[in-house]
Image (cartoon, rainbow, N blue to C red; front, side):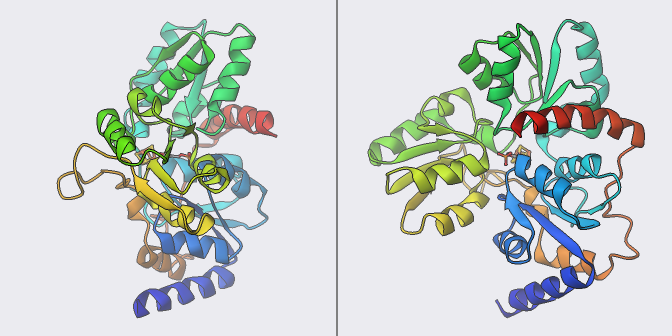
Length: 323
Ligand code: 13P
Ligand code: SF4
C-alpha cells in the first residue's frame, strides 16, 4: 500500500510537470481511475473518452485503456501527443477484424452503409461511413434505418445482433466478439436471478443474446453506472468487466453488486470478467512512461495521416449526431 501511495503521488507530480492529462476507461486498475479523476482528467466510457480528449487543451494525453482508444484520440487531435502505458493493449474485436478482409467484405456489398464499432483499427474506421460506440450505436442505426439504409455492421456480432433486433434494420453482421463478454452465460444468470429475485440485471451489449435477454438495462459502461445510481434497487447483477465495480460502488454506496456468471472461474479462465488488455495499464508503467516522456517512442500512438483524415469523417458523424 505504501508503494502504491508513493507511486500515485509521483504520478500526480509528473502529470503537472509534463502538462499531461490522464484519460482512463472504467475497466482499468482502480488506482488509475482515481488518479484520472483527481488530476482533472476523466474516467468514462469510450464515447466520453473521445470527446474529452478532443476538447481538452492539453498538448499531451495519456490514455489508460486499449489501443483503439488511443488511436481515436490521435485521429481527433493529430496535433496532440498521445501516449499509452502499454501499446500492446489491444482488443479481441480489433484483432478479429483485419483491414484487408474487412475491405473485401465491404467491396462485396457496395449498397450498404458501413457502420463500425469504436473497437477497431484506424484503417477499418477509415473504410467506414460511421463509427459508433455502445452508448449510441442503437440510436444511430435507428436513424439510418428510418432513412431506408441497409447496413453492413462490424465487428461485434452480439452488439450488432442486439441492435438489429431492437431496430428491425437490415444488417449484415461481421462475426467478431469480445473475449470477456462472450463468457457470460444465460442459463447460469437465470439461476442466479432466482437466488436474488429483487436484483436488477445490468448488461453490456457485447454479451451474448441470451444474457442480454435477461437484462433490465442494456448499455455502455457509463449507462450501466448511471442505472445503478438511478434505479430503485439494492442489488444488481452486472454483466461486464469487473473493473467497473470500483466506480459503481463509489457512485452508489450501500448497494450490492454481483458479477454475472461466466463459463469458468478466475483460476481456469484468464479473461473471465476482466479484460487482459485493459489489465496491462498499471501504476508502475504509467509512472515509468511519465518519467521518460521526453525520450520515449515505444509508447506513442501514430496514425498515418491519410488514414486519419478518412477515419475522422466516420468518428465526427457520430460526435455530431451525439451533440
Ligand atoms: P464502453 O464504450 O461501453 O465503455 O465500452 C468499451 C469496451 O471496450 C467494452 O468492452
Ligand atoms: Fe475489447 Fe472486450 Fe477488452 Fe472491451 S473488454 S477492450 S471489447 S476485449
